[in-house]
Structure formats: C-alpha cells, structure tokens
Image (tube, rainbow, N blue to C red; front, side, top):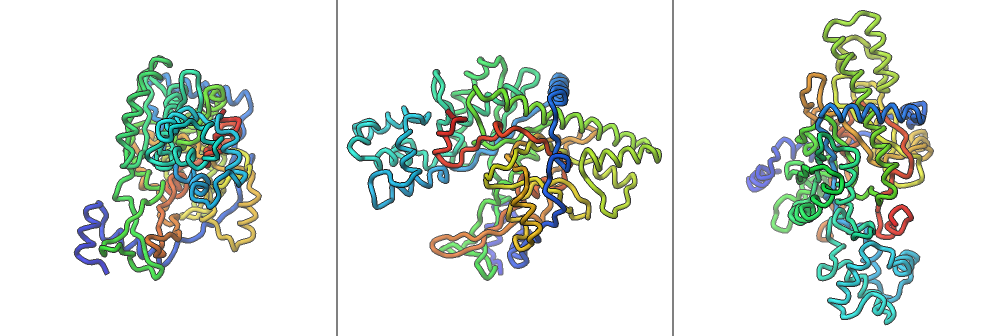
Length: 499
C-alpha cells in the first residue's frame, strides 16, 4: 500500500511506517466510546472551596513560589483567527451590501467599541481614502469589513488570535499575547522572573516573536520582573495521515500522502519538553482587561495551591511506600487516593504496588465553571483502561450518543471545562515524567473533511486535556464564571467583559 516515495515522505516528517499502519487501522476500527460512571458535580469529584479554604490555598501557593521553583505559563496560540470572522467573510461574499443579519447589524452598530477600531480606521483611510464613518455613510460596509479581513488591510482573517487587538487601554490597545504576559507576571512569576511559553504555527512564529520582543520590556518594567519567553511549533511527527472514505490513504494531486495536524493533543510533545516544576495551561483567547484580572489571579492561585498541597501529600505517601508501609498506613493512603485524588478501585487489589502506581504520576488541577451552554467538554467520572474510575475531561465526540443514560449525563452536567489547568510534571524524586507515557491512545477521534472537493477522513490525536492526560491524577475545582471569557466570534469582543 505504501510506495517507496511514501516511505521517504513519512521519514522526512519523523514518522515511522508502523505509526502510519496504526493510523490507517484506526480509520478502519474507529475509537471506542468511553464508559461513564457519572458527570462530576460538587461533592462528587468537584471541590468548591469556601473563603477560608481559598485563603489557605493562596498562602500555600505563595509559599511554594517563595521556594524558588520553576513555574511556566504554557499558552496554546497556534490557532488562526479565521473562524472568529466566519460571519464577516460571509457578509463580504453576500449578494447584499448593507448589514442584514443580527450579527452584521451588531458589528457595525457597535464598531467603535472594538479595540481595533483606530487601526481599522487608519487602514481604511490609507487604502480607501476615507475613514470608517464616511465609508459606512456611503453604504460601503463591505469595504470596511474587507479592510479588517484582507492582507492589504489588518489581515485579521489570517492572523493568529494572539495577534489581534482585543482590549482598549489609555496607553494603547492590547493583544491576547500581551494579556498573557501580564497574567504571567501576576501569578506565575518566581525569583523575579516569569517564564511564558507560546506554541505558534510555523507561518506566524517570526511575526509572533517580533511582537513579543516589542512588548515584553514594557510589562517587565511595569511589574518589576524579567521575562523568559519561549516558543515552539507543533511537530511534523505528530501530524496524521488522511484517508479516503474506504480507509485507503488519501493522496494529493501529485500522488503524495496528505498529512494533517493531529489537533491540540499533539502539544503533549511540546509540553513534555518544558523544564518546569509547575505549568499553567490556558487558551490564548481566554483573557480579560486589567480591571477584571484580580478574580482570575486569585483563582489561579487557588487552583495552584490545591495542586501543591495535594502533591506534597502524594510525595509524603510515596516516601512512606518506599520505606515499607504498615497496614494502617496503606489504609490511610488508599483513602487519600480514593477521596482526595478521586481515583476509585473497581475490583482491583488495593495493595502497595497499586497505590504507588496511582500516586507516582503527573497531577493536574482543572478549574471548571458552571455550565452555561457553551460548546465543549465537561468533567466526568470515567472508567479507565485498567478498570479503575477517575476524573476526566470529555468532549461530546467521546460519548456514545445512542446511550440515553450517557447523553442525559452529558446534557444535564452541571459544569463545563474552560481549559484552566495547572500541572505538576515532576516525580517525588525531582525527575520529570515522560508525559507521552500517560496518554490513552484509544481516545482519538475521526472527523469528516474535504480537500479539492474530495471527501476525506481526518484523525485527531487524544486531546491535550482529554486523552493525552488520561492517566494523570486529576482534581476538579469549581471556579467563577468570570474567569472564563473566550472569544469565539468577533462580536464576543463586544461583551461587557472585554470592554
């Protein structure tokens, strides 16, 4: 099935022939749905700390930072903003010239509220000879939208989200990239230094680096710290081969194999290369202006405090196991694993070996918010490959929609995953875990796509915060809705939280 040319092509990407065979097999067999026990809720897998507990966790985090640990803020930032502007692309191509849909009317009615208004007005004057107001008065709405989207204007249709102007300030508008630098200074700096890592797509990395270089000194001076800012790209070796509907390899016009990015799960490789004791993970578009940051900063410290508190207990128990635990101690450790790490044995022998395995693995604390109908994953108690039950973040694609009981769990779940994670990635001896070892490879998924008018099947790797972290110790903490402000469409920037 694979030609010599194919083998050379995959070798260049750092992919083995066996990996391709496995992927093609996965197209044939598909991926199993996960077996669920329940949607996680407060009191059943989700912690909701009170004011006193929150203060205790913030203090634990401050103490941990004072010990000189290396803390990194990891920001997946490779996504292009094109989906944010889907409605505006449609307007530019529509067979009418004035705003017609509710979305279009809202955009133009409130256009002055966008942080990019002045920049857009300037490119309109340069390229159209008139400002936004004049163009709109003449009914040239499409010219305004085109100047926002097209390369000769702001090029917002192609830029990464991290490079768009999101928020207004007296000293000038800020991009999400800048807001993440500020956040890094406020809760992730230690030893007077904030380590921030962006994953960026290959075509935007130089632009991203240039913009970071322009802005970092400004925030370093403002917050009295220095920055260590690093970048990585998704590796070609994590791309997956595309298939035809009959599961044979999909080929380009030149007969070469078509490879596609493996989704955000590929970033487990990038995460694995970060030198850190603790890593914060948060999506590029989930940022707020400075006036709303105190709540975000407090809760980031709370979830980090939960992490380091539980990690310290796990480390102490691992040393007890090393020394030879008594029956009484084994019972205490088993209660910790079941009640505080929410990992439940289902018929397994709960002995020292079992407890050691469940304690000696990466740990993550995930903030979860009350479900307000946003699309995306949720927190569940799920059966693992070894038959145990533990906490996982699931996407709808991992759930059997024909199972009424599971669908009820999914639709009636009380909480949602906003991708607000803090991760401990070293063991009790101070050695980094090899994170790819903790991926559940059976949790990928297949989607239908097309290229040049031909249908194809695409394979996504287990998601970064889904199957890629399946075999981690996971703890869920309820965080306020105010800490979750993603920007999925350009009009989301008109929400009060982004003004």
